[in-house]
Image 1: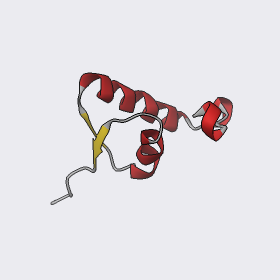
Image 2: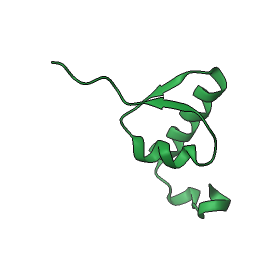
Image 3: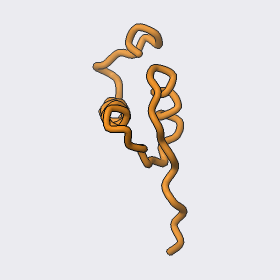
Image 4: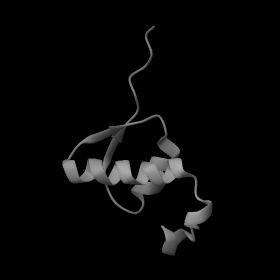
Length: 60
């Protein structure tokens, strides 16, 4: 992403870096990442494939 999108790591929010680490870890484990942050995960998915799904609706 640094090369393709020109991301500057110094100014990238830590939360986005953590999303990348979580996504890659889930990919390695064969797990599905559950998150409401679809925008960032779609962006990460352009670089490497992994499975993610939105959280279940809040029924409370």
